[in-house]
Image (tube, rainbow over all chains, first blue to last red; front, side, top):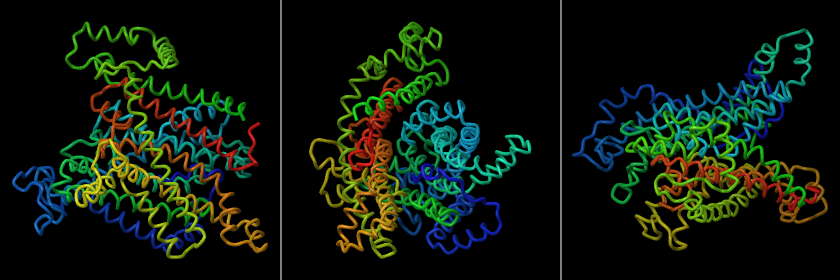
Length: 296
Length: 306
């Protein structure tokens, strides 16, 4: 996971400024890697949205006569141990992974951004409290934290989203707080305070838009991480449960057939890799286009 | 230096309290009665009551937490619900395996990642730079467990050169450590590249070049030495990522480490072991960060801790 939290101790440009938005867009369009990432994301989202059109039939219905068939004209990616089309399950799996990725980022942002804003803006005791809680959460590597939470909450799509989402919160808190620390000293914030603007308005109207650049970049990278984490939990058998077509769980069950039918493990892995790669490519491109200071 | 180490150890106390709180409430967050969950479905009401008293669940929450902290201070992590062995015994039996894997993997990652990053930075925008940056991006996007499975297919199933899993010889270490190393080598290469690019454009490297020093000396003695702090930081941070990756890698290769223990315990709902193993992972991560801080002083004489 690429974490830009440590790098973002300074404020950054607003996304709302028209000319800088155009400049960034032009820069992004020139970045071929980011374009490839964008195209892959479009394909990924389209396959998730149009899954029933791309694959007719039930991707979870077993057909034991066809089990572990190699790729053929009928089943371009072969079949799994229960004779289900791997292509069909990958297409439907894109829905699950997309829902999880969006859900995870939503949970991370909805909790992390307000806490980061409050922590950075008010400082003092509340900052101390939030930061120590963040330290405790960051003492666990993200995947382990998600693992611990899933152990408590249980398996399934909803709990996978909550667990991974919570593990993303400290990263958003750190990222936003770092930016706010610099922005709160800016003249326009001081001016807003001097004319008696309420703190909530200052935070939402003056500070939040200035934090949007690093948040946008981080969100793209976090989507990739979320897909990886969810697939990891599925692979371990503690994420999304069979027969739901989830890429990680598909790989988990393919482990037993590595010696006889390696194709069962190959294609879901490629799907995960391409989905994560697309968000990483776009995230890198966005970072270069929106704020080169964050470049790694 | 000793004073700094002591101070730094004390500064980890709030984080440790935070971790203990997190783990303590983890068990209390369980849906339903924790004693019932720990006792299992078939337990009699007497057994459940017994566990409730053993864990002090009938006492106020602050007393329960204080008792939990006292037990932690005595390194008493409870007993495994599955095997009835002390949790510390379960952990110590597996910790060396995970550490072996982690150390071999981080060494491999540094051996490949740092030179790759340096070469990439010395020849920016050349084919080798594109190769390194593209490989790094691929490495970051690749699911570690899938890479592990593919390595098994190639080296164990097709070529039959290496064992597919388990332990017992040095050959067993190769595939899991390569899998785990691939997970972090990308980050190390990227960070080395960006830091080296920055130091190579600094005035002191221009001065070194203008003195007529060989490019090799400029890169290694002047630029790399100054780029080491961020690189060491990222290596330390990656150690955490590696611990997370170990859970998956150990599962792929049936490696009897701490990660595998966590997964087995989650599947068996063995909460004392989950709590204990995750606590040890957290402690390891904190200790690695402390060691990283101390290494700063060794590599950069400007950093003094007295």
